[in-house]
Amino acid sequence: MADRLVLLGTKGGPAIRQGGPSPTSSLLEISGRRIVVDCGLGVTRALVNADVSLKDLDLILITHLHSDHVLEFGPLLHTAWTSGLSRKVTVYGPAGIDDYWSGFLQSMRYDIDLRIDDEGRPDLRDLVELKIYADGIVHRDTDLVITALRVDHPPVVDCFALKIEAAGKSIVFSADTSYFPPLADFAQGADILVHEAMLSDGVDRLVARTGNGARLKEHLLASHTLIEDAARIANAAGVKHLALHHLIPADDPQFGEADWIKALSGKWDGRLTIGRDGLVIPL
Ligand SMILES: [Zn+2]
Ligand SMILES: [Zn+2]
Image (tube, rainbow, N blue to C red; front, top):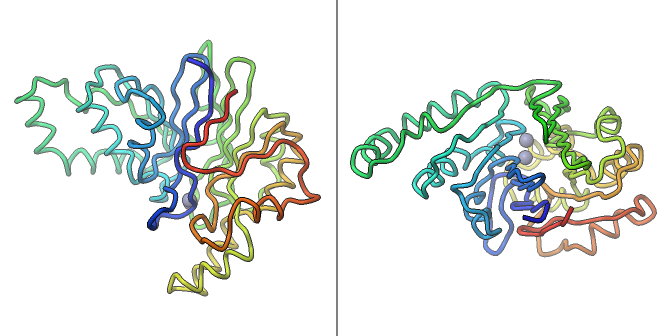
């Protein structure tokens, strides 16, 4: 298995539209590990399309509990289970992920109990090891170190950037955050910084077509990062590769890859990837 990062879903926000990308999720395959970061709607299908056997799920990390990052977490595990999962999956999530998981199990209890009895499956409840994390070291074993940094994503308090170090590489996910300079220290020298990004011209058009305009714009500007500020973080951190995802807007035909690249003109001259669903970055 060649080490790779796959951007499974690259859209910021929970809505989906015809022909458009899916909300946020990513896959990192490194050192023989399969690490899913966030579980937005579409993560299960995207993993299968990326040629991942759901039986081989290993580690799942949830950055925060906004639905565009967690909505399909339960369905992913349930589908992996009905696909033959028989090994333990470790899940790291912020406080509250336990409520989501117990609520999901409760909502699917009829089906889960039925399949254990009728199909002889192991108990899904025993296959998932849920761990709540906060700032600092999240996970450490001989091949892999994962560290979290609380970022600034009001009104969400428990939202964490994640640094994954393995095989001599370091990959950092910004999670959802407003411009947050401490992230540059956290991501210092990273091989890849996967940062969220927002295009300011696009935000105005987005709020115009969404309905709750002024309020939505206020949220976006207070809680997310404009593309030029993502470049500032990448420059200050001296990262080798800036990959943008959680794009806002992501499905406005008026804004394409060229607009994102243009917005970075003179601001970032390192390696750049504008995310799209299914895009593979070899490590
Ligand atoms: Zn989000
Ligand atoms: Zn969010």
